[in-house]
Image (cartoon, rainbow, N blue to C red; front, side, top):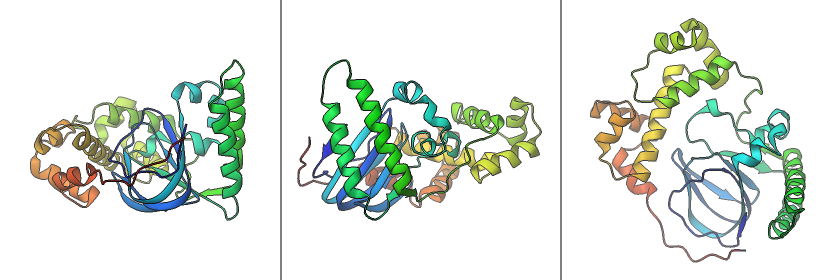
Length: 278
């Protein structure tokens, strides 16, 4: 957990845990592989593991970052996945796909209480002793319970129950993006009729399985553009688009710009004014 009193401009980065960013003041631009959005006080970003994001054009942007490990989510907080209020905050649906940063907006008047709860949580975070973990979990749940009551998502909430075939199909596609998948082949792996799989998939994700695959390939390509210096043509082949023209066309369709332009823009690290951090 950290408190940034003046969040500096940052280049694109990611974490291996679930990140919750509570914006308390100032303004800036939040950049993800999906685009740019203005950000400021009252917003809460839910950033799944491995999702790239950055802050740019920051002006006195104040925020608290809470990084929740998978061990915490699978252990003391495992029950929250089935909770109708806390589940959407801590268990973003993996079958949604892509590099989606989910945004929640606090209701008017709730920001001051969220600040007090964050200050208390940060104080406990800095403590030592055998009772620290229990206190941390207790205060974190108080914060999340208040946020669940006093905020609303800017995205449509996914249903809690999703057919196991959708989960498994998403896992298969992500595990081997470079494979020349077809709907009949994917359905065959699951021993399910292709039309039935397509219908289940649309109900859960609002898109067909092959469209989901194209979106996953595009976002994986975006990540490789950020973390490697591989040629653009090589990246296309690694995610399943052997034809450079097909890769260029598909990438532009998803991100609105060429892969090389995307790499330059997302790697930009504007000079910040400095940051105050607790």
